Length: 204
Image 1: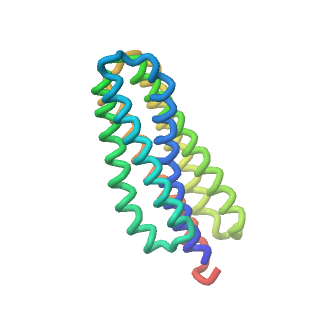
Image 2: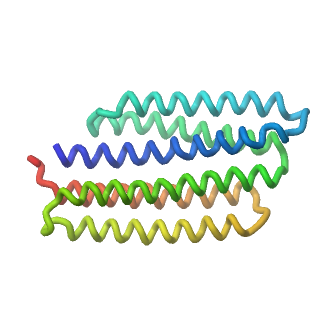
């Protein structure tokens, strides 16, 4: 049972990280909406509605599977990944629509970077809490995974902070950095919860 729980933790953390990024994106775009030029406002507003709808659909699927087993989550993740890819594509279209507004791009990037770093910290805290229920003899691998996660988080933070301070960068550079950090998060998240699953007896 506990092993199944660790798998659910992985999927929930994965989904929550995406929702946090979606929320950060929408908040950032809404904050700058009044500064848009009149000629691009109708298209930008339409894209904003599409982004909000995708975010709502994504969260609805996550809520539906909140207590589901691993097999159901694996199926749901395929659907969620497609929704996430749609969200990213719409965001790129939005950025292209509003044109070279560097301040908007930087503000959105900063919001997304902060959401990612928050997800790293939250996942590490969750893992630490879950590991506390495991006997000392079985904690070695979990502690190692947690240490590795912290190191990866520090690397990701350093890369994102460097880009934050670099001044004007293209959205493709921002997007590539965020994607790299997101992949590192997914790998660390998977490794950590796999370590917990191995540390917990199947009948626990």
